[in-house]
Every structure is written in C-alpha cells, then in structure tokens.
Length: 78
Image (tube, rainbow, N blue to C red; front, top):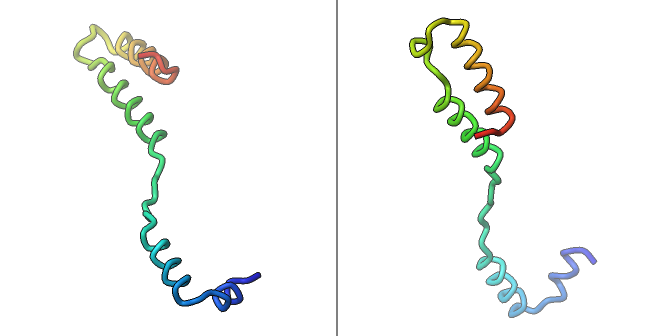
C-alpha cells in the first residue's frame, strides 16, 4: 500500500490527528562528539605535560623527554 492510497482512505479527522502527532515530535538531531572530545582531551594532556626547551639542560634531553611524553599520551597513560 503506498502513501497516496493510505491518505485517500483516511478521514479529515484522522489526517488532522496524524498531522498534530507529527508536528509534536521533536526533530532534534543528535551528533556524537565523543571522538572529538577524546581527541581534544588527548591534545590537552600532551600540551599540559610537554616540557619547554628552556626547562631542560640540552636539546637532546628535551627531545627524548618530549618523545616519551608523546608515546605516553598516544597509549592513553595520564
């Protein structure tokens, strides 16, 4: 049964009741942002834990420390 035949078989009162039921339904679209929030949290964790080059004695120790922080953040360690 297609839509045209269904509407032809309905009375005016039934169509009005159907239209009010449709208009009362909330048409809110929900977007899942959990992946984005996890990415933002991971980025914040990295930049809050990341050392600054002037805080360490040499660039090599800074680079090693920054690499270890990157690996910890990528693995999910807080």
